[in-house]
Image: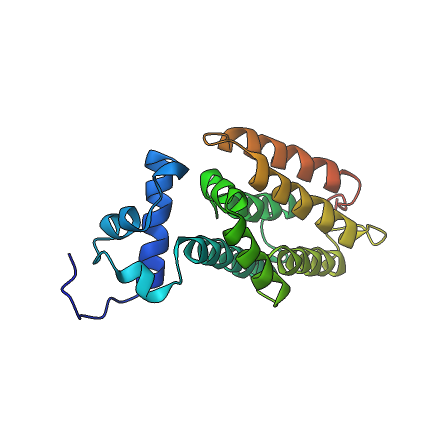
Length: 202
């Protein structure tokens, strides 16, 4: 256990990762402040020193993972002209689905105070699905300018459909449903890009 009074590097992430492990292993009902600090090998009072309570902690975990997902989506800009458009979209979409375990999402949705805190954070401008959608749209427009997507393709609607489906899967999939989510995402990308991609040059 970390010695009392000694600063713990990256404490927030350490606690967040510990919470995800607890929920994945033991279920949402097992998530308590003591379970988190024990899993993180921290003092019992550390969580309440940095968060007003478990509800705020859960909300901040969700907001942190949404922000991380938004940063990952920004990385699409570096993939323009590389690989395939479908492959790039699928990879990032699946990464987004892995950003939050289903049980953690469910935990936030079933704790009214946590849900309220998370909603207030999003309303205050915390990056989430709007930012992710913007990154998908910008990527698709860049690929359109590069000639890999047809000039008339509605890139904004493609991005909206893809991000909306990821949001739906994130909020509704059951633990262990990663393969189903992967298959759904791959089929959706294929359908959305079916008429939008330019055929390869002869």
